[in-house]
Image (cartoon, rainbow, N blue to C red):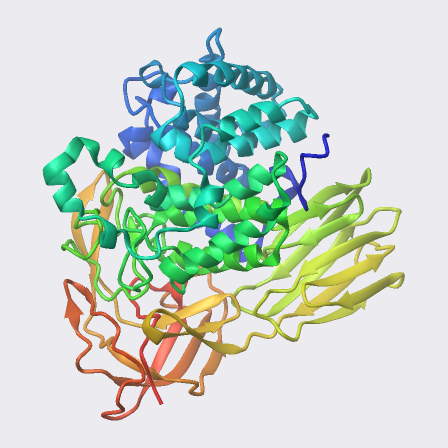
Length: 630
């Protein structure tokens, strides 16, 4: 491989990692929900799909669905869904024309939807070993090399070139081919330059500050994407674009790009971030108020971008943010049974209903839970979140080092310097602080096991329970286990989880413990708004008061419970916190959302009350960013 193809870690194949414990149960819940039923009930990915040669939807929805369903079906060994994925994939592979293009004829001139299907084929080859994928991809790259001279990329395709570069990166690594960097640079010239945008970020206010969407529709409905910076502010484009600096660097970009991924992440958090880890964008960047919306597509795409950033740049802050998103924003935007999802979630979400809210340009159903609130992109794309998280659990470094990065129960079985090694991580993290690593299979040569220390943990502990020719060292980033490991060697790790008050929009505060954010535990009353194909769309209300201020730095009591069959259960939360607060009478409902947060510190009026908080991911209604009093 050429020197310009550079990265910090090596990701493992899908087949080398197996989720276990609560993580596996979460995947089962997902498959029993919309992920396992969508083909039968939703025409966009059903038997008439253009990606099966039918007359139905022929753009991104079929590939989006497969991008999550395929790894989900593999991890669960679901033969029925694997066979369904195979039908789509076989049709796709057989659809390639002599010039190298592929896919439904009706959308043949589109580039973007093909990038998504290439990501599906990456996973498919790792699972199946089907070598048709390599010649198929090479032929498509040859087609693109010529096609963009005649028909340059624009709009969605230009904004999302990073997804193509990811697939090109995978192809180069899988085949050993080194002559495609020129093609990569040519594709970069087709791209919206996310590296430049993040280096000189111009959107420090909500997009509504710069543009009036309704006025644009009145005056130039057919040209809105040309008049405004539509694609540079579109929230899903932005979260996809986060991986672009890493991929530009990988294909020979300048070394200054190494810090740009982290700078971009910090910039988005500063101007548009909320405590769940999500970036606010009710279609377009919308500032950091906790009553603006964060789109589900942007959550899962941000997670995937972080995986790429982590692999190439290796900074542990990417793993910290990936856990924040996966263990807070992702579960909260779906119903517990995964039979309904939102288009937009709010950090302070005290009412779910069909109502006009302060979105930039999303409709009145956007924060409802159901089959297809607002628009169907999230219905198709949400499935990748949990199964593709598994791809970030373990990676390799150099020839002899296995790294436990994102922390969740799992087994890894990989090769180090030509020898097989397998390790099990048994844990109820992120709910609890103890992790047990057990060696199942060890190489004959010395190796190193590195365990990431989360950025929030100040005093990690590790104890070698079994193992003789092994040393354990702890630094600020890793616990490093080195030596001649043997089967049944065991390392017990503890990451003590302290209560932290973090600061956010308008000096609001949130309570965090470990990777979890906590929200006010409100009663939730589900009301069916409509039903389609057996899937109910819900509005959710509560008589619980929500307008509390927290005592800043106040004592918080922690109670841990059994992690139930539904890991993010509201009725059986794995952790509850008890703290102190007061009612803020002038903080009221406005435009069917919690009003803007009062300026802190608020005056201390009335009696203090005991408040119960539960993990953000267990809630559908909540307040998680509070004013405070002293």
